[in-house]
Image 1 (cartoon, helix red, strand yellow):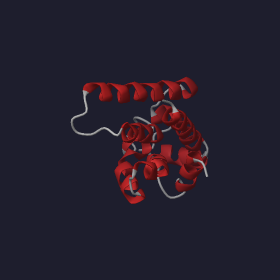
Image 2 (cartoon, one colour):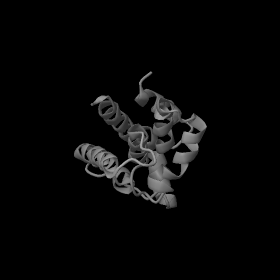
Image 3 (cartoon, one colour):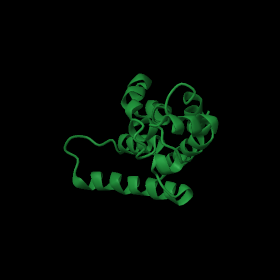
Image 4 (tube, helix red, strand yellow):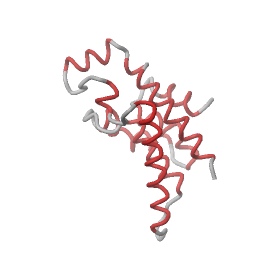
Length: 146
């Protein structure tokens, strides 16, 4: 099963960020329960604030894990992660125009009317799945590059 397929399967019970991070957790020695706990607050663009898309936030966390950053590593390692984060954001924006959850979904998840729109239009299983799938595809590409 691909990481994207695993993330979409996990999404049946977890938010976008949790699902994406948990799909990759084992690759970095992170237990799935810990990945789910770390990412729980990133859902809905960070606690339904609808800022950065949860899938993108999880992608950023995964890029950090992939860096294997440790105490004593220099600025060059940090800068390399920042460059990958910018690339993830730019590639995502190239396809969807933004990384901001509110703009991606077109509704306010903090309002009753926005939640109704989100549910009636099945955005969780359509739009959010598209965003998660793209983040996983980009990560798969970045993580195999030298």
